[in-house]
Length: 144
Image (cartoon, rainbow, N blue to C red; front, side, top):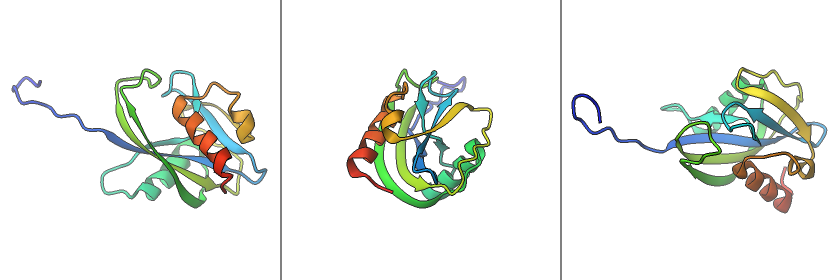
């Protein structure tokens, strides 16, 4: 409660992320400051008035400097106060599959490490559980 005794309501945040395939047929995974040392995919919050796809394209530019094409919906996931994340949060995560012509990553301050790997190799990394599900779905559907 605020000092004014008004109740503050919290709502889930909408986020976007994508498993992206590069020219080498490998996919990009990243280790970020947000997921307590685990690996995942680039992404972030959707801004007010921004479409999901526009948010995804913006987040990839900001976090890794990549342009995306062939953006396709993959999965909808939810994270409710998950200890894998760096703070208490409730996310509705809209996941995509996409393609990048470039594999040259220009990381921002959130990205600690990155790797272009086969989907099978990615599963050997310490992935957050949401990325693990996304990659397993990718392998099962053999999309892109």
